[in-house]
Amino acid sequence: MPCPKKKTSRSKTGMRNAHSSLTKKPMRTCPTNGEIHEPHKAYKASDGAYYYKGKQITHPKF
Image 1 (cartoon, rainbow, N blue to C red):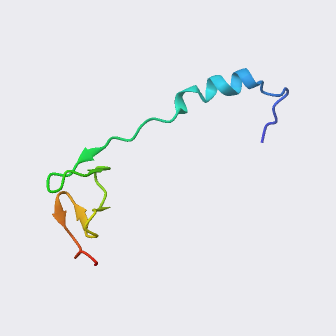
Image 2: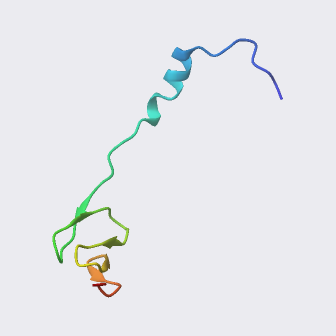
């Protein structure tokens, strides 16, 4: 493996990593109860049941 001849400066490291900044995740609103959630993921609603694509996939737990 080759070895670098000089230390990479903070500026060069920062320029290389400039494109990898964090972005906000897209959010959707549930058509059944109006809660906000991430798309393509099952989410737990306020009634205790899990929903996916607007359909209930588990029973609510009281």
